[in-house]
Amino acid sequence: MNTPAPAARILIVDDEPDIVALVVYHLAKAGYRVSSASTGPDAVAVARRERPALVVLDLMLPGMSGFDVLRDLRGDAATANVAVIMLTARRDEPDRIKGLSLGADDYLTKPFSPQELVLRVQAILRRTAMSGMADDALQIGPITIDRAAHTVSVDGQPLELTATEYKLLLTLAERRGRVQPRAHLLESVWDAAPDIQTRTVDMHVQRLRSKLGAAGDLIETVRGFGYRIAAPAPRAR
Image (tube, rainbow, N blue to C red; front, side, top):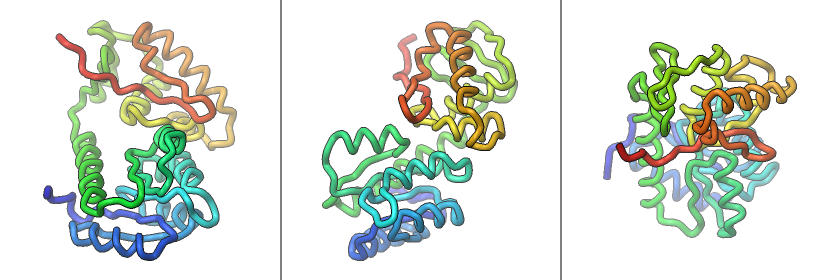
């Protein structure tokens, strides 16, 4: 089994004590620091206070659902980048799709193998660490973002973007494959409070898509939530 990142903090959110005890035991044995919460409101509070690297989140919770917890985490700039594994007894595909569209990184149904959960946690945190160590060039399909030079090109052709358009594209690209709520984009790109008109985001996305040309199709609208940039398979060269 691969060694996890030293002392990474994991938050377990479940109202079943036996499940919490089982997950805490196996994650602690694997080398993680583990916290727990048994209600939705407590989960949000603990996540904001402790900033865990990953949350193992049940859907059926007292106080507020796991979906609402996930929505709150993604909508808060302080917790928007926390990795989340949905852990639930629900096997219905719509629930899976909803959880992933809200920004969950993975989905595991009960009953589950604790060893499999540990492996999934390790895989997600390893991927997150590799992303954090990436070099200054960020490549998504035909789009190349040079973070050091603050430049963007499409198929090798330089693209003229405003500072806001560049920051918007970079935010979506660095979180590729994950839905970014409009409120979070307002906070991270415009440093604005989340109650400001979200039409600002929509207009900038529209202009950014236009400038990107065909590559603009990589920016997807997730109706009712926000935007995400697709993570296409590497193109043959």
